[in-house]
Image 1 (cartoon, rainbow, N blue to C red):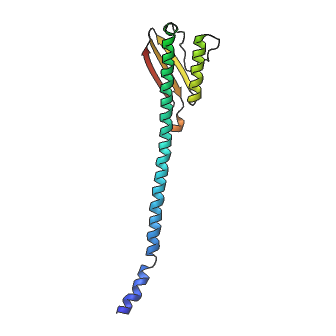
Image 2: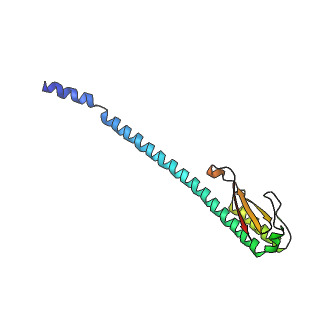
Image 3: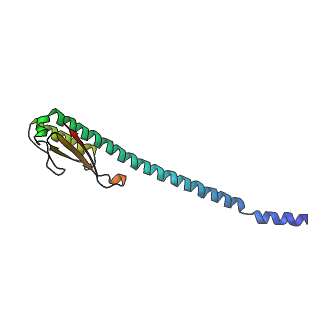
Length: 146
């Protein structure tokens, strides 16, 4: 009887170790894939956050420029839409606006800027394409009294 048990035991155990190893490999592979996916999402989210930070800085930069040339801003000389042409000429107003729009286009993908004033209240906005972050076009605006 003892000999019969010894003969049957190894045949029942054959391949069990291999199955355990295969299951362990599958579990580890799924874990690695999950980590890769999390890393990809993190990079995409960080890129969106960077663009939003850049947009914030650009909007505040133009708001400060408008405070420097307050009367022109109040008179609406800086007003422009997202799709307006970049101003030319050698005036302070044209140079400030053109420089700011160049920075918006440089720092933000498909970046565009808009400025609207209503008396002392100015609204500065920037728009950019955030498709890399799987988001639609983003707009960041701020209104300030100058």
